[in-house]
Length: 189
Image: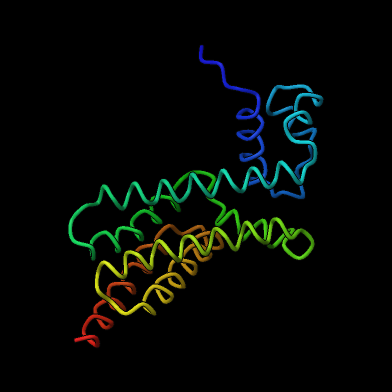
């Protein structure tokens, strides 16, 4: 049996609980119980709940963006196909069991006004996603403003899928992205 280091066990437990139930609803004792470690061990790795929340968001950001980038890269094809693959990936994510929307928006909604580190993590995640889209838009040859518009489509799809429990929001946003992209390219001439 593979041993998982204590820090990873704590982060795995925190991610499942924080994402599934909300950051404020989950106490450190619940994280301790889910990780199977002692409270002393939990606090050795994360001296406060705030430290744990920040680590959870940093790791989630890295994993989310890496998963998206890998999917888009494997989509191959023309840059336009890769750009539109973002919406296919979103649809897969939305269909996952336990999908609850964007962890960063959720955490920001709970703590952003009172916890600058959570607000910074949410901004960082959104800025990095926008930069990823901007690079894809540049590769396609569309005007830079198109990336902002596509980010808004993606963010709207994430929220719609979470609120309505409908993974089809990604396909709808993808269809709108095709129209937007075609119009942007045609206007560029």
